[in-house]
Structure formats: structure tokens, C-alpha cells
Image 1 (cartoon, helix red, strand yellow):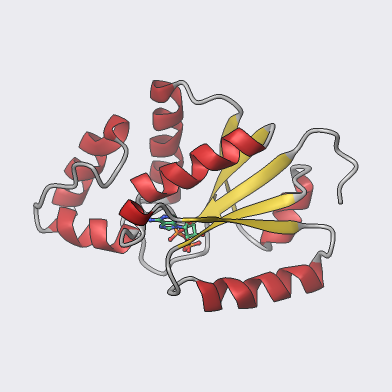
Image 2: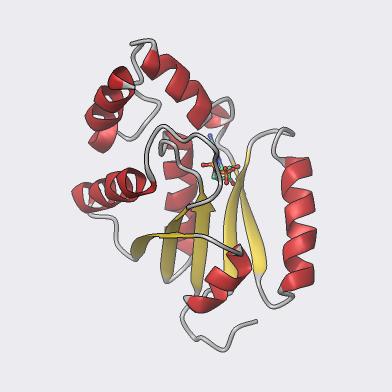
Length: 167
Ligand code: ADP
């Protein structure tokens, strides 16, 4: 484990866009850690709808408007474990929805542990009411002009809806 006396973690993701499921995981991470990096993965998706800058700005806006403390919004590319080490994080945070995330996370965890045995991954189970929710579902609904109310944080719902309608 890291020598850093502060409990620092990185919550990485595509966040294209950030959903209430992501928000739920973030709340749990904030309650457990001294500092949480919400970090947008730069090279994660081939054709994201939102640019990395848009995603970072959107999440920062939500953090500011909701007054969420102990969060740094950032982006990164390259190896996640290297990024975690570079910001002094001893933990990675991921969310698990039913079984659909498990096999992927199981494999990534094994690789990360091989690369960086000192960096642990902590998993939060999705709340039952969010276990069906994905960024891709929101993109599909939003692009078709459907309501995304209740699926994304209220503080950024309008920007996400407007941006999806235009794409
Ligand atoms: P990635 O492309 O890295 O999987 P995502 O933005 O899809 O990025 O998700 C980031 C993290 O949040 C992942 O660990 C994912 O399993 C988790 N997650 C996604 N949707 C939900 C949800 N509805 N509830 C809880 N966790 C979720």
C-alpha cells in the first residue's frame, strides 16, 4: 500500500456521459476516501459523443453546483495504474452492475495487480434502481429526443440533453 497518509483513490471511466449510476458510486467513494479523482479516460472510446474536455467540464460543473467536497476532476491516457500512482492514489474505484461488468473487471483487475500489486481496486455494487443504467442507453435515448430526466444528475441534465439532441 502507498505511504500517503491520505486515502486517495481514482474513479476512472469513459463517462460519456456521466449518469446517476456514476454519481451513486462517486458518493460512496467520497464517503470512504479523503480525496477522489474522477478521471476521464482519454483513449477509452473510439467514437465518443462528448469530447474529453466536455466530459471533464460537465463533471466539474456538477461537482461545483452540488458542492461536492474532496473531488478532483481530471483526465488521463496511458496506463491507469501509472496514473493512480502519479496522483498518490492507492486505490481504483469501479462500479459493478449485475453480472455484465464482472468478467471484464475480473480480467482488468488481474492485469492491474500484475502491473501494480500496491494498487488495490474497490468495487461498489450498483444500486438496484441503477443496475440497468448505462451511458450508451442515455446516448441512444437523448439522440432520439427522449427524456433523460432521472437518468443523469439534475445539475447537468440540460447540457447533456441539449448536446445529445444536436449530435
Ligand atoms: P468504462 O468505459 O471505463 O467502463 P463507464 O463510464 O462506462 O466507463 O463506467 C465507469 C465505471 O462506472 C465502471 O466501473 C462501470 O462499471 C461503472 N458504472 C457504469 N454505470 C454504472 C451504474 N449504473 N451503476 C454503478 N456503476 C456503474
